[in-house]
Length: 333
Image 1: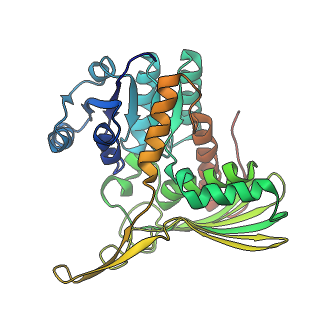
Image 2: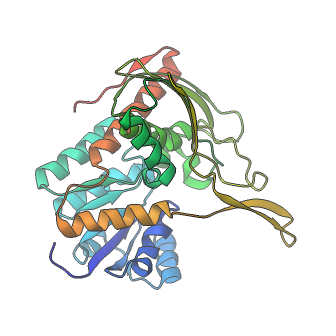
């Protein structure tokens, strides 16, 4: 990539992280946002107007004027949008989960490999300084063997299309399993072989799961438990959710709270108590890393294969919810 300014195209604005991608043009000096596409014209036009961007009613027209694409559409739309980008030879960063099925995720990875173009997955939690430090400590070996991990990625039900399986592909298990799965793979360098999961709809009037509990067995026998539930009540709980780990090793226990640094905010006008985060902006760090890879023609910092592996764990979890027994993780990597 020789252009001095990298032109970003945003395909789909259904996911909240689309706002981070739109802000990249103002945060990064070597980036501009060429425009926005969304299959929902009203939503797409409103988003473009909010950020002073150009609206594209046709995806291929947007692809013609960008150097990299960032997909923030509904989960089920990642696959068709990505295939268009691969055909146009546009490096693409895709929101998580990479796809709603293993087959679609694999097709995306294959398409970009065939086109010899980079495909990345948006896992911004890797950019937490606490996560990076714990990974370095684990890989240095000073903690000794890890025996088990108790993790959470609990959150508030986002509403809207997240509760419609045609758009989301699933509920809380689909939405929140992938982050911790990616962290475990990245931090310990192991693969998930088997998943036992239970899931249900208990908290909201929706047709997808909103609570769940997963047990992941890694290829070295390590066990990871994960609560990915939408169990944080909107308008009541002080923050949208969490990413935590309690890591038990032969040399002790380490507790990780990714969003721990915060300021307590009490507002008279809203009569609400909330947490205001501070420190590193994970989304901005991830986008800057991605842009550097596009500019330099280097491999994506977090690959499409990483996204595929996480989708495969979600797939095993949903099969386990049905069978009520452990299910093997299936990919053809």
